[in-house]
Image (cartoon, rainbow, N blue to C red; front, side, top):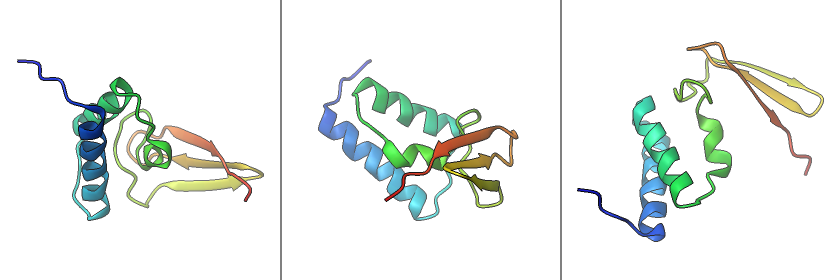
Length: 92
């Protein structure tokens, strides 16, 4: 049975998910994929929260990854799959 949820409920669900991660609870790639799909379906921006996971394998970063900063790019190599994620560094 497919139940529809409101945008407010979806936002609360996403916030709870990321609060659990900050508290140290491990999440599986399958759970991450569900949350990302929910955010896309309800047009909710994840912003900086999407940088907590590898784009390819959806494993949360543990702090053991290789990080490079060159000019205005930050590169993070995933310790699980080796995929390199790149982000622009905002000058403030």
